[in-house]
Length: 219
Image (cartoon, rainbow, N blue to C red; front, top):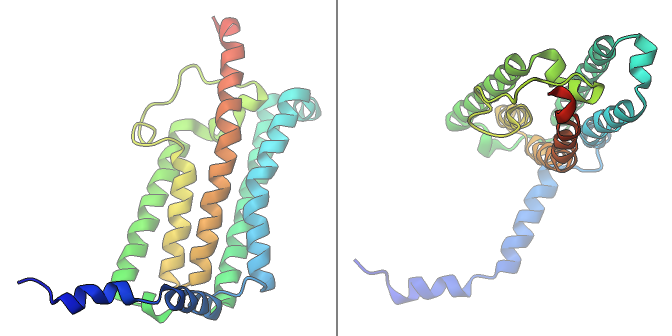
């Protein structure tokens, strides 16, 4: 049955400025970007990939950590522990930011709950399987310390997607935000994804260059 003409024409009469204003009002009601906890979460999210990329590149150029610890393996384990600690701090800031922000009742439903469980489960699967495939050294920038892998890892989950640990982590934060019905958490999850995307623009080519420059010596 065709729709009445006035119904179709009604779409053209929508005042989209009011729609945008309503969306902005809704966002301001549930997300306070000036909240100290929210700001701390944003800073910790942005700092972590910046930190490990700068330290990793500095180590690759100078081998300062290797000299300090007397072994590239010991130095890599040290950096890995620091990165893990920073990630725990980031998660703590993320949680405190969600607690300090209002909840969105629309997200407090059974569908949202099951969606959050699914996202968290998928994220944990990606992060855990990535770690098992790469090992501690491979996960925490071993190639920046001169500890190169013999072959490229192609097992699951790397046969499904590139950089599964980053996107698995993003999925966990996404699910966590839904579980807490937190619009602030959803905004922070977008920040996580953006920071990872920017980090990959630098990490990917740099890692490829490390292996390309070492390839003749490996033979």
